[in-house]
Image 1: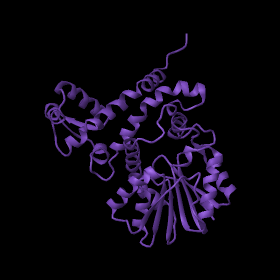
Image 2: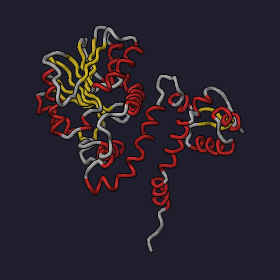
Image 3: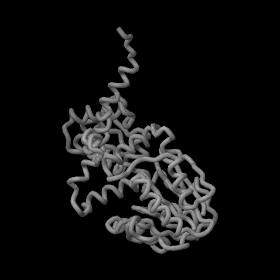
Image 4: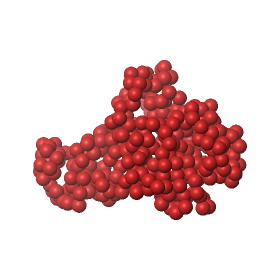
Length: 333
């Protein structure tokens, strides 16, 4: 009889029940518990009254949030933990509630993983309507803004740009990265390129930042439309290439190369796999997420990104890992 390894046993239990933790977080965001608490110290009964919930059930929910380090409990009083104060209270600069809501939205897709693996096709795409639901689009773009609000400063601080003047932000969505770059470089003007139904929302984020004079929006399809010729000294392709297969990614990068000025900088921002394609864990799982939710998407390795950049003509290709779970692959023309 094999000896029991209790750490391995516990690991399997943790994997099997991991969705419990997610559901607690999803529900807390849905009920807006962290915003309701704010800077206060509340009892379960007081919070239950605020969120119109059952007091006994609320107490169990709050105790679970304490176990996840999202709340702090002192006797019968609950308050937000440092993590919640930074990321889970609406209105704060790095609020991640919309991003968490997005993960909740796609959770059901993962229940179709078995069928997707058997067929090799994204089962969830079969019943989607022709036109994107405006509510779903807004949810997704706002979620991307949440995540980018945390990453944007890191990206700007990491990329060595010298007096950039004209930037193209491919599939820029809410424009969070362009806004950060324009704030950092006083002479910089940016163009955000994205699908027409997305750009309607992009304008709102630009207006909120008060940068209408320096950031413009261009609607189009990156596989079908041209980006121009010798127009930009900086081109950012952030979290786009994981949607497409290698052939389509080379097509997009060729258009970027054409639009880039001599000595210009082409920046890819992605979740980059190692050469075994098994790590980092998030990138490996994200590749499955792309299998489930797109027609041809995947996570790719540094070697693959480098080969595509070399194919289109880029030189001096470098990689920089950000403090979070993504990396920059940068090439020069």
